[in-house]
Structures are given as structure tokens and as C-alpha cells.
Length: 276
Length: 276
DNA sequence: CCTTGTTTTTCATTCAGTGAAAAGGGAACA
DNA sequence: TGTTCCCTTTTCACTGAATGAAAAACAAGG
Image 1 (tube, rainbow over the protein chains, first blue to last red):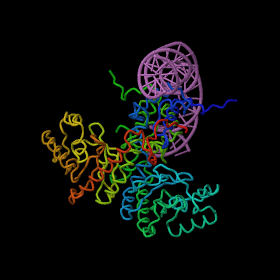
Image 2: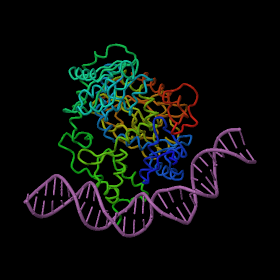
Image 3: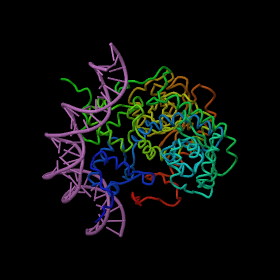
Image 4: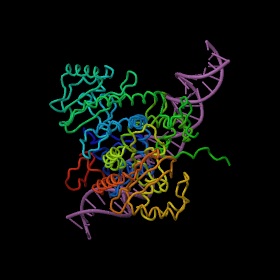
């Protein structure tokens, strides 16, 4: 039996178009028609036609060299996403303030299944480890951010993380479930987590959870890539920022979307029709 | 003759799916099936099915209340866009540094036809005029950012702007073509633009173009919303930031995408296949 | 010049997509 | 509690939008 080289392409046109978009990645942000045809298993003519439609809508664009890249439209749509409109926009002033006070790199992430998803990273260093790229997912057990979230998560999440052995990234990574649980206990007591070279050698961090009621919505971290200074001296402003972000998120809980310029009256909800 | 209430829906499935996605906007970031059906002119069953496919790919998600919103996937894709991966990522360290030095709000925009498109805005003020929302487009003649870009643009762009009367937004907006040209001349001499209450009452700015060779790629601005202090005292760091960003952009010109962690060798191009 | 790899166009075939209609919620109100 | 209204979800017979093979048109090397 000869296995096909790639999975058989989906039959639905929409799924095919999305499959094409899905081929673009950090590693391959610019692709040609024939590359796309090969990697999706779709006929070149099909890829050609679908790309034409996507291009008409600015979902893809052509680079100077004729390769296709994701287009402006997708960037604009990303801004309408709750991840941006709700989380990042609420958090940014606090993150900037924190960056300003500490001078350190500031990171902001949310829990996403058994991983942390980076939403924002503010650094004034021009070169910075690529691990913490915005949009990247990192394990919960090996960073300050992850531990801060995990410590305040529902037990199920911890169970899920501990269901598999804790993967060591550096000699400092916590791999023993018992001492890991103990660590989380300490974090709950102090209200913030710290880590030193547990994920990337040479970098250390301090992180605090962003809570809305009982649930962890996100976490904020300060990171230093040179093991310089004592990050714990910033614990107070860090907790303050996390607190402030939590408050803003709480204020717009239940709303389907952030009230755009907060008319200060009741709920601007009910019947937001598309055409007024 | 009874005109249809909405334009007849496109026949292509892909165009229909994109039409659905296109309904989401800043004003209406969360919609129901029936709202979408009405605003697109598509049958509810069609919208239902297409949303199902989009949801499977995380292009849309359901809010707690059952409305549809744009999904995580779109946010992630926005990050792969040249606007983010190339422009914002290059600029951010410089912008942050500038914010840090000045304490003022920092804006970053690119020319987009006869308008400026905001790419990034760094402010530590929690409430800020909604005009300068990231993703917003603003006219070129009424802001520091716009004038900085226009002053160094090709003459065609200026012609396009002057083809229509300069729309006044405040009493300070420049509306006379001749004095406007003169202003641009001054900006070229000084290397930066200033504006005071030309677009939004109560706010003033200073802005510098980001050049790559002869062409304006973007502009950086400092904005103050309270007419406090003298922004021109920051002209030196502002120009420095614009310069630095330009240098980085120049370094990756021609590349279809930013080299991810700059292997410092030649062009990492040629055959970036999707599957290694 | 020919070779090898692309992108684009064409067109007869067919199956994925369609939408009307009906069924299945669920919230508001009397 | 029953009634009304509007929403979502499912169904299904029909049909034209989508398909992909093949050929044409282009581009880059050698």
C-alpha cells in the first residue's frame, strides 16, 4: 500500500482555502504557488485560483519576488480578536508603566490548555531570545509566567501538566512532581513566582498572576537575560500591575467585546446590529 | 425597481466566507448568525455552515453569550504578516526606548495610499483618544505623523492628497495648499514635523520619517494629549529612533521575510520549502 | 539555444454547496 | 403555565461552482 505523501486535501473549498493560509508559519512566512501545491496536496490550478480570491481580499499579498505572504487584512483582523482588543489593550498601559519603572523586559501571557501563550513582550533590547516571541507557546512548568499561572489554576490543569514527565530544559528545570507542587504552594503564599535559568540558560524572571475572581486570566513577568540585579525588588510594582489588569478585565467581564469608548452608562449590549 | 437591500452575495464559496469574516469590525466585533445572514445577504443555513468551518479552524470563536467573534487563529496569522513581523518587530525596541526617555505617548505608522496606517501606539495612559487606535487610518495632512511622511514622499502622493480640498478637523488644520507646501518644505529642512491641535483638539505631536534610501517607509511620533511641555526637546532622540528603525529595515530589504535570528551570513533565500 | 521549473488559462465533468423549509431551543411576557 | 417571537440547527433534492488535467505562456539557468 502506497501511503500518500501528504494527507488528502479536504473536500470543502473553505477548508482548502484555510489549509492554504495555514501553510504560512514563522519558519515559512513566504511561499510560492507550487510550494503550496506540494505541501497541501492541492492541484496547482486550485491553489492558483484560491490564492487569487484570497489576494483580492488582501488576505495574502505578493512579495517583491513574487512569493505569497499573509496580507494586511489578516493583520487588521487580528486586532479585532479578543486576544488583542480585550487582553492586550487592557494590559498595555500597565505593562508599559512596569517597563518604565523597572527597565526590564516585560512579558504578558495567557494560559492556553497546558501551555502559556505569549500575548505581548516589551523589550528595548534589540536582540532577545526567540523563545518568547509573541504568539509562541511555552510549557507551564519551566518559566515564571507558567508557574505563576499554574499555581492559581484549577487542579485539573496541574493534573494535566503532571500527567506527563516534566521536561527538563536546563539543569535548573524543576522535574520532580513533589518539589514542584511544593514550589507552587510557596508561590501561592507569596503571590508571585520566580525562576532562574529553568527554561533558557542565562535568563531569570519574576511573574505574577492576573486574577478575575477565582480564575487566572493571564500573568505578567519581568525578565532579565543577563542574570543581572535582583528582580524581586520589583515585586511590588509587578503585583500592582497584575492587580490593575485584573481589575480592568473584571470590569468588562460578560461583555462580548470591550466597550469602545466606555459610555459610562449601563451595558451597551443587546442588539448590536451590523448596520445600525 | 426595487433595489436589493444588500449587494447580492458573491457566488464563490471562498468569497462568501471572506465576506462573513469581513463583517466583523471595530464597531461590531461580535455578531450572531442571523445578523451575519442579514448583513451579507446569505441564507442563514449558509452562514451557519460556513461559520462551522471557520470555527473548526479557529478563525472564529463563540463568545460566552453565543455570539461569534474573530478567533485566535487570525490573531496568530496577523503576527506572521509583514506589518508585524517586519515593521513592528524592528521598530519596537526603538519605540520603547523613546517612550522610556520621553515619558510621552509614542506612535508608529506607515503610509498607506493617501492615508497613514497606525501600526503601534505605546501609551501608559489608560484612556486615550480612540483616533489613534492601532489599525486606524488617518489623513496625511492633519497630523505630525502624516506630514512627516508626506514631506519625504514622492510628489505623486502629495498630488493625490492635494487633489481634494484639505479637510479641516480643527481650526488649526492646514487647509491652504500653498502654505501646506511651504510647511512641508520646512519639515524637509528640519527633518521633523510638528503639529498642534490640527487633528484632535488638545493634542500636539512631533514626528520624524523613517527612510530607507529615498523612500519613506514609516514615521515615528511623540504625542501629548494635554499640550503640556515642549515636545521639541525630544527631537534628538526622536530622530535617533527613526534613524535606527530605518537602518534595521534597510538591513532586511529584499528579504521576503525577516531572517529569524539573523544568521549573519548571506541571503537565507532560494528554496524555503514548506517541509524542510 | 534548449531544459527545467514555474505561473496562468482553458474547459468538460461532477460533486460540493445551496437554500427553503421544518424542527428544535430558549427567553420574555402575561 | 401557555403563547409568542426569534434564534440556531438539521434535512434533503437540485444544480452550477469548483475541479484538475492539460496546454500555453513565462522565467531563469546552463
